[in-house]
Length: 289
Ligand SMILES: [Zn+2]
Image: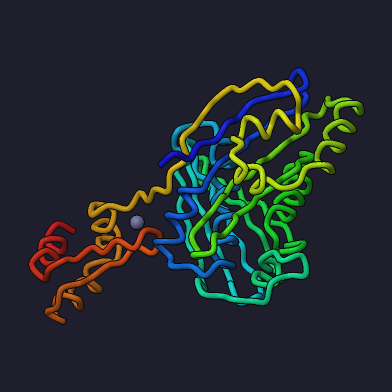
């Protein structure tokens, strides 16, 4: 995997930015979830945002989950990321196909429809932080822009893109998040707005061979890169975790499974891995509860 992101500042700290190339990560998601082009784009955009937003956490155990629930045929998408840009995702309906928009883009907005965007930050406290905003367009980048403005009161520009190749694989994917600090000057804001209005699209730039750093220099001029972080599609499921989930079902439920006298197969929807437990193994688990 060669995906990575950069994070840093510009305009003497008046602006902070995150920019990512997520082609391999989105392609891995496409393979795992066997998504149609529209669904690859929708899931890929949210994965890209998740990878960047995960790194906004403060401690190693912080987890951010982005969830979209809409009334369109896609229904819902969930993405979870950690501070090291390990990201995984789920899409309720993987096979939505709709006519292209007038501008020849995939109609992600209609696929998702109207609904809610939730940002859940698990910071290791008793209750996670949950921020919710109504979806504006269902195109995801705009919806996140509104989320940052409304829930976090940070003026933000979000761009997310997935370009699909003729063979339906991912040709380019990536995005950026640019945020203004409270002390950003009018001059800085005007300069960035102008550059953004002239900018074509993040996937066009990536597809033309530019990297996240070059894209940020185009938009922000001199930048200071604080960190370079690899992005990976990674699921944290394991046999041990699945075992814990079985334990949490309780004695009665497990005994019913044992009485059925069949191996139990547990599937991880995030990575498509299967975990099989034999009846003997189930008996062992019951014995230690
Ligand atoms: Zn998994």
